[in-house]
Length: 64
Image (tube, rainbow, N blue to C red; front, top):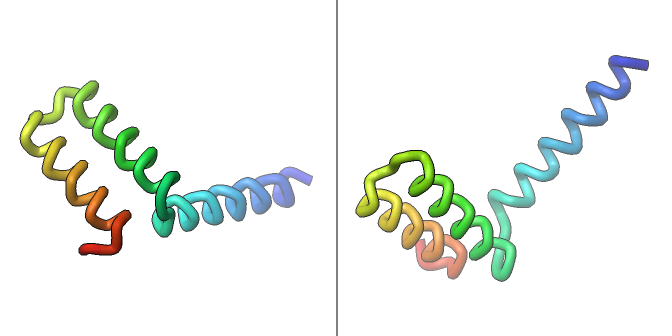
């Protein structure tokens, strides 16, 4: 039973991460904003956090 539960959780996490990595607006923009807030709240450099955020938004728009 434990192995079935572990396999289910692994599959669910893999599906979620795949959907996030290929997300498009509006979910994609929300994901970018979350990453930016995480970067800033964990002591990231403001310029680097902003650059990563803008790159993420370009990816969302398909301009990467």
